[in-house]
Length: 107
View 1 (cartoon, rainbow, N blue to C red):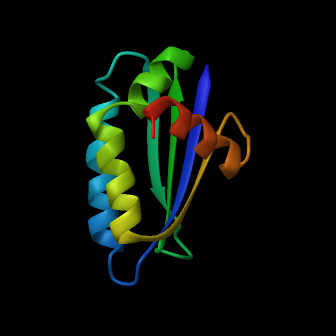
View 2 (tube, rainbow, N blue to C red):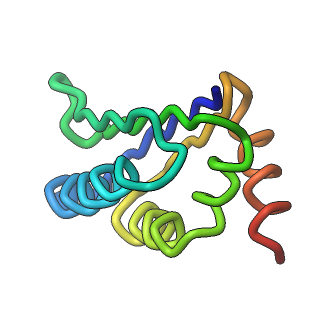
């Protein structure tokens, strides 16, 4: 089992748009082979903070997601609608997560 955890800090007044985009991607991922769960939440005390946690059956399934159009769309949304984001895989650091993503997606 592989766990992907993404925390996104939304830009001011972009919370709703970012949340809708993330929800569409999270819902779609549940239909993808290997996605066991996809939970999206918004911090009640700080609505600008959005969390996405997904559990994938195995590493190849997670890697396929990183190479998908859905992940490309998610990266775009995090870049354009977010101030910052943190991606962790299996409890590792953001730097480790980004290194894995970059190596699997190519230059």
